[in-house]
Every structure is written in structure tokens, then in C-alpha cells.
Length: 201
Image (cartoon, rainbow, N blue to C red; front, side, top):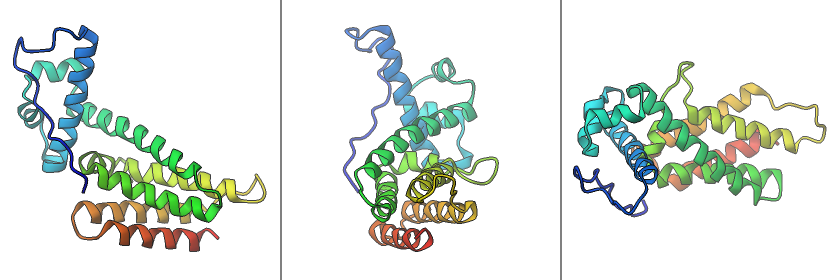
């Protein structure tokens, strides 16, 4: 895993950088809170409370509620923010591949790279949604469907949604294995890449 500097708690009362504008300080505080939400969620999972987040971040409950309506809102906001960033990174990585098979393999590689690079936010991305699929699985499925559709010779052809869902669940399961320390990233990545290329040839 890459070395990451530890997240700093909020500065003590009156110790904020006065050289920054109020908006810049607020943006910094919100970013810090989002990071602590991800870290606390990874550590505690569904048992996470607002108290856990504010204690870890070194802020008061009022500060938390300045930015979020409640814990569910905060978790959803953090997950959506990270999902947008991940999608941009994966789309950019896939765009460098030339052939459809190379795009599928790059999708697999990029997916596991982002999971391994930021396990805390990846845990948020893999949190089950209302339909039991995680935001990560939905995003992976959407990206996969786009790649497969673009690879078809006729624009009217659509990828089989059942295969797309199966591949998305496989990507989610592989990411969960990596986060739990039960598998090596390169082996899971290679396995998913092989599955994708066989399913969608």
C-alpha cells in the first residue's frame, strides 16, 4: 500500500490559518470532515455515529451539522464525492487503451488501483445501497456497459444487462476481498480482467 500522511484533526479553536479566506477555511474543514467520515466508516462500518466522527476529527457536533443534515447525509455525500473522483480517474485511464479488450483490462486495473490507493473511501463506495448494490458496483457496471456498447459494431446493440451486473458484482467482491486483506490486488485484478474479456468478446 502506498504511504499516506495521517489526517490531521481540526485546528484548536482560534488556531485556524487567518491568511485563508473564510470560504477557503470552510472548504478545508469540510474536506477534513469528509476524510474523517471515510476513515471512521472503514473502522466502524454500520455502527458509525456522529459522535465517532466528531471525536476523530476533533470538531464539535455543531461544526458537523454546519455541513451535513445528519450522519446518513454525510456518508452519502462523502461516497458520492469519492465516486465522482473515481469515475473520472477510471474514464481517463480507460481512454488511453486502444482496443476493446485493452479497455476492459484497463477498467479492471484502474478499479483495483483506486480501491487499493484509498481503502477508507473505497469502503464507503462499497457500502450496500437500497437495492443491495453498492455505488461502486453501479458505477463499475455503468462504465463496463459503456465500453461494451462502444465496442459493438452496430450502435443499436446493447450489452446483456445480466452479464454486466455479474461482472459488477465480481468487481465489488474482489474489492471487498482486497480491503479485508484476503487477496492480493494483482491476482484479483488479473482474474477480473480475464473474466471480462471472456464474457464480452
